[in-house]
Image 1: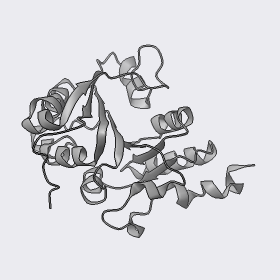
Image 2 (image 1 turned 135 degrees about the horizontal axis):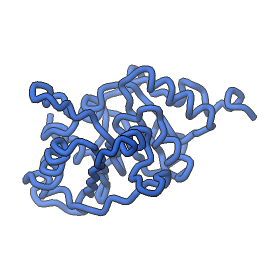
Image 3 (image 1 turned 45 degrees about the horizontal axis):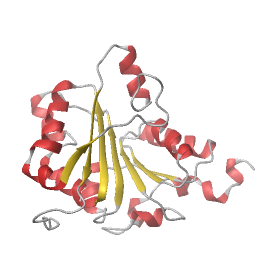
Image 4 (image 1 turned 30 degrees about the vertical axis):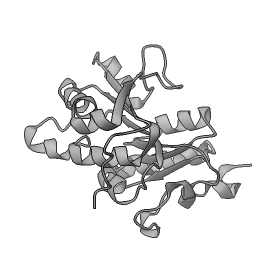
Length: 224
């Protein structure tokens, strides 16, 4: 059976139409079966999503990609490989997490090589910021994880301080090991296109993983 003949793999099925979604909504309804939900910020061409979805068919994967070219490429890629446990949407990740995601709904956030916005006047555009962290931790299930890689040393210091050094992080998160993904080749952590490009250029890759504590003290209320 070809992809076009499979009713589960229509273009509109893989692509998420936010206009048809309420705020907030249960992302589990995007999939046809139960399972832990992994969310990738900046899915690119879908290399990570494709390989992880094939390796873990019992997991559900949601990818967010802003660049329309990559967004459409990754959707077509999932169709060609007949992947039915991936959904992809094109939107601003910060707004989506803040406005659409329910509490305790995401098993793992994957954020690999986020744009460092190196110029100081652009730092406000960075994904990792205090306001975003409040919502990321709110959405994580207990023991849920945030996995991060970057090739930018300065941005890594900011991320590490945010996820480990702040009072909010210390109350809700704890460091954990960062294991290579299933698709990672020797010397790689993620096995993404960006990582392979940066490794060829001789860049150092920084990694960090934290998980949400089972219990917290003075658990903050969801921001309104």
